[in-house]
Image 1 (cartoon, rainbow, N blue to C red):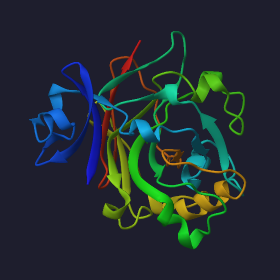
Image 2 (cartoon, helix red, strand yellow; image 1 turned 30 degrees about the vertical axis):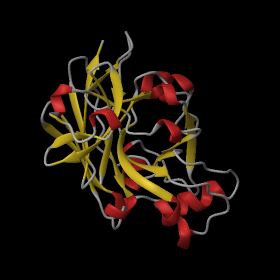
Image 3 (tube, one colour; image 1 turned 135 degrees about the horizontal axis):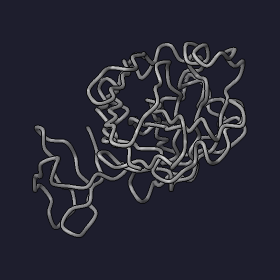
Image 4 (spheres, helix red, strand yellow; image 1 turned 90 degrees about the vertical axis):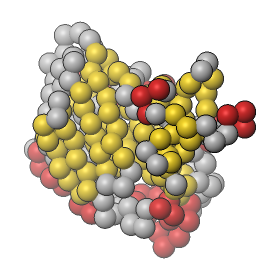
Length: 253
C-alpha cells in the first residue's frame, strides 16, 4: 500500500493511493477521494513516528565516488540531518543567493518500523516499515571536504524533499533491485540502480544498530549514483525510484 500525508481543507490528513487518486483515512472524511493537484503534499511520515534520527550516506555508489574523483569508502560514510530539512512532494527548495553549484541526489530512503538494536543482517528487513524517495540536495560551495559535509551543505531547511509515498515494505520484494532516475525539466540526467550500492540496506541497518538504537520513523538515506548536475531557480526536478513513485520538486531563488 502507498501511504501519503497531506494538507487539505485547513487540516492534515493521512491518505492512501487508490485508482490514481488520494483516498482520505481521516475518520471525518474517510473514503473521500481527491485529485493529486487538490492538496499540499507533506513528508509521508505519521506524527507518531516522526524521525528522531535521520541518517544519510555519502559516496555509497562506486560510480558516484568516481564521478567526484574519490576512492570508494571502506565503511559507511554517514552524517546526520534534522527533521526541518524535510519537505514534501511538489514543494519548493531554496537555492541560496550567490552559490555556484547545487545538485540533487536521488536516494532510496528506508523508514524504520520498530526499535532496532544489534540487528543481524539476516533479520534486517523485519525492522523496516517501508520505503520512500528522497532528494538530498547538496550545495558544493559550502563543502569543507567530501568526508565531512557541514551543516550548510546537508542540513538546510527545504533541502530534503521526500515522498510522495511511503510504500509498505511488504510491497517492495527486493529494495536492492530498483531502478532510479532523475530528470531536470523533463530531460533525463541521472540513471542508476540500487543493486550498485556499496553498502546495501541489510548491511546499513546492522551497522548502525550495532552502536546506536534506531526507533520507529527513523530514516536512512542510502546515497545516490552518478549523474548529478547543477540546478537553477525555476528548474523542475523529478527523482523517481521504480515502484516507489516520482518525487517532484522545484528550485526557488
